[in-house]
Length: 268
Ligand code: 5GP
Ligand code: MG
Image (tube, rainbow, N blue to C red):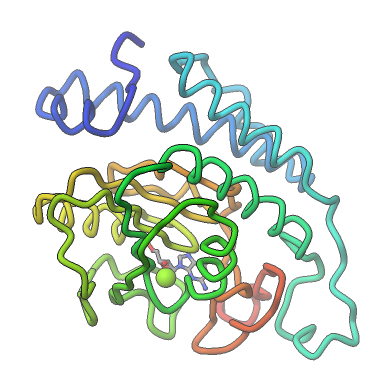
């Protein structure tokens, strides 16, 4: 894997050759397999754990460090906790909490530490993708230990459903002129990756000094667009999740933990 990528700018510069695209795919698949295997072990999901078999070592040392840190963080998460049956949302949620308040606090703290270190002394604008990011960004921003400006973009997402339409439409743009600024785009969850990929491109075209991406949760197994967030709190299994800002048709945003919507409620 000589073409294993040191940064996304290298990726962008070289993305015209089919060899590079093939390497990107292999790299992302490897990442996905390893991270899913770690998540699956924690969540005791045998099918996803079987992905380990397809895993090959394909990361350069820098990425390996980041991957290992993420794997350690996932491994340290609380064992599954059952949603209390007397909780007001228990009729809508699957039996197990996916990420507890303590898990989230740990992930946010670790992301804030990395971001504070990487952006110290730089002119950074953190752009949150509304609406789902509000709780995550409120916590993250308070823990980032370096000067940063905040702004918000609202782009279209799922509406009432649970499947991405793939159409990304800007409903509210950032107010800040982003040219020459270091921009960190923050979303609560990356699924197909189309939203982040489109917005990253848009902001690059505005001549930002750099554009990186941060998500609390990454559904790596569902990636369609060629993007891998630079900062990830944890890998998320292929479930429709709610809480900590994430909604299901406008409901369940206010939950302080991340749960899973019962599949029978949206699958016929
Ligand atoms: P993408 O463009 O990556 O397919 O979708 C990203 C956006 O879709 C996120 O910002 C979020 O609003 C929404 N999304 C993706 N997966 C989920 C999920 O499991 N639950 C909820 N509530 N929203 C999701
Ligand atoms: Mg969103």
